[in-house]
Image (cartoon, rainbow, N blue to C red; front, side, top):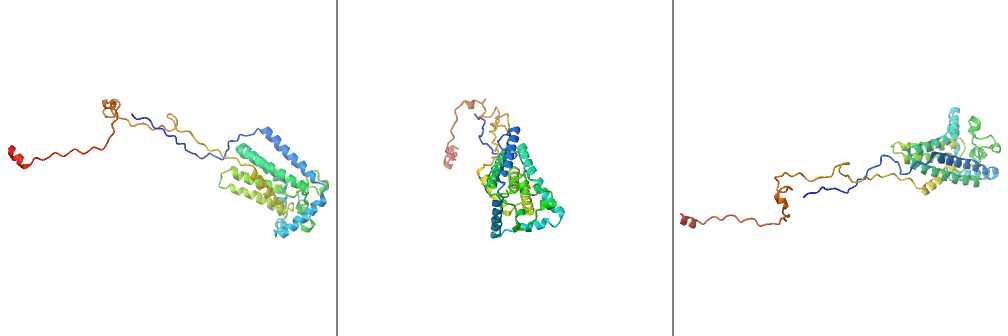
Length: 311
């Protein structure tokens, strides 16, 4: 008479981590793609060579805009580095060696551990680099270390190490007039944003120290203006707005079935002597509907006169 009761309730569970439904892309394809993007950027920057006059005119404008905006002078940061040769050499080494390896390590980690976030980060970095390349070509800009008005020291040439040639005309590896925007800072900021989005540690916000340290280094070594970092931040924000973030997988397990997971509720066991037991003859009768019945009348007590007559 009783049937098992099953429920269709599905419990929403938290995912084990920020993994997404995206699959890991082929490694060889990704290596070829990232290498091609790097080469396009590297050779594309050199298209801005030969525009020294425009680069210095733009540098004068940027320096004037920063003073009009009351931004702190780049020299105040450089003075902190010039207190000792060791500190300024560490800053130059950081500028020369951390930029690319940190970004590559970031992409490798995401590729191995967070494929969905890897695809997202790679697209964001590609979009940021493409936007920066357009500005490098259309708006050549001399760095503050070349600007006489700034009165700054070219720390890389004086203290070493340096990644640039002593004269821009003889530099065949890099375009020294591509200061706006600062990809050193833009990439570092994306590394921090990507790691904060892909991890769940309560200490993940400390990754913001990476772009902060990078900002102090690029400004203190006189390779970039404050506005270079601000423009890089604006471009990164725009790219992040248009590139959709990966979604975390939400697991919705199916309802529990007998034999798998929790057993379904069953009817209570009935003894054979119970009137509701299937073996009882009463179980063959149609079910009765219980309705409110009047209480039986109490037995009447005989009157005293009748009792005496009977005696």
